[in-house]
Length: 633
Image (cartoon, rainbow, N blue to C red; front, side, top):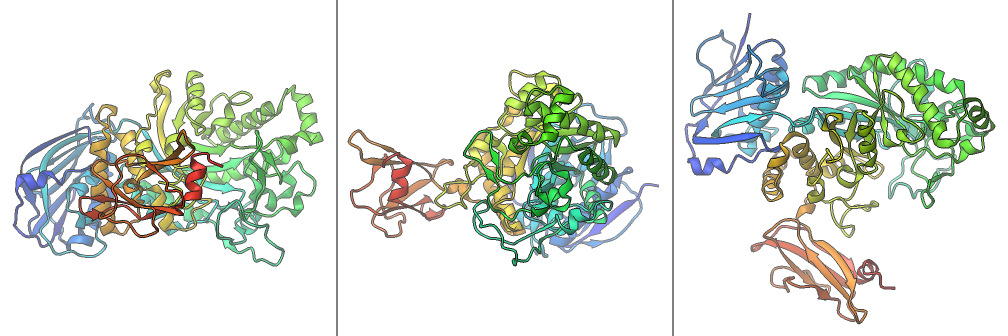
């Protein structure tokens, strides 16, 4: 028996003009087709939300919660009837255009109708519907106002099936509630895959009951703040109590929470490198004598990145020549596989240093026995054995693109992070690929200029992220499952900063993965980003305003002076600057052409304006830093 869910709440009858309403259609990701129609829809006093078909309950519950939170809805149940305000209906005959995640959304002056082939489509239709509401729908408390929506007909479906965000909870631990919060934010923009990086040198974050030391020892390190990777080594008297882990019940709760929002969770256990937390708990997994003295990393230096390939100063690898390692991995995967219904398990494979393997007699004996010519083939041997373990648990094997080196495991899927090249090679070999290249999709990179952002090794601006195209011309598109952005958290200490690093670049990734390639347009996109900023302010979600800040470069002139070049990602912004140490506003010089640094100037200050209002942040750069950028000694 199909049930009706009735929602009653107060709403005024004021109707805004059609011209005003069209300004409110600023949806991210951009739908396949939006047809604006005359008029507005105004919510009446009694709203009937009809959810038709099995599997629709989580969607109606989600919509009910959003409405009751912001609009003081009173819920009343009633039986089915011809009148509805919002109707969520599964198609009795599949619409071939929509697929499994597409939807039709019609907002008329009388009611709202969302149809889809599957409940996921209805859920994404609801996300679009909520973006048609005034920004106050994001309020955590009731807002008394007129709730009007622009009338429109929308047809929408995703370009890619894999639309992911990777959240590194290993470098810094994020609580179960914080992970839920991350899920809530990502589903607004139709992401459907959360990749949880659960194990690394800095922490093992998932309970394995048959291996209790993984969390007793491996889940905790010494708390440090500052720039990760430069910390002093912890002393023996510093408490190792910083961190945490998810129990298996926690994981079940997270998986259900995500599933109710049509998100799959893919676990990652990063091996054979990045395994210091595991080795600290079980030193017998190492090839290296003295591993019993190792500790979970707290951000101190353990690798020499100045050489290629990088050299490990502490052996953070599992031993590929040790049978106990494969027994260990079998135990881990035996417990992990049933917790995650998603078909893939990610097993890392990246940045594995080989210098300690080169010194190991056990590895040399393995090479002789298996006729392995080099260390890349040693890792390939490891990956192929690991793939068999993963497959024995009924799962598919995925790894970072380093697993290509030395020969790819037969059924492995590749996540390409070192640019697009690994993904291209894997696709040409007819392996499944997910594109997540550093060049476009690494959310741990700085949002803007190093002068104002927390310092990391590279900058990735919003416009560059928006230029991401997951399907190279040289490959068969059928092997590209989709893409994702990755938030590594070495320098991310808390949830507010995780939000700052994810948004708005997450908007750009969502549009790349959902919207038709032909519909992407930077100028149009960035205006919609600003609309989302307004919604984030209401929702109290932090975001990076770096798109308003100038792009700053410097070079030397023929007479060895340094000139500064300033530009903006967004059109319509003016840059005002000063070299006299005072604070510039729109009464100061406006940048129009490259500026030569005055002879004795100490610092450059700049700020962007839109019209007569400041919009960017005040940025200060010492002249010494500008000289370095110009290559002047």
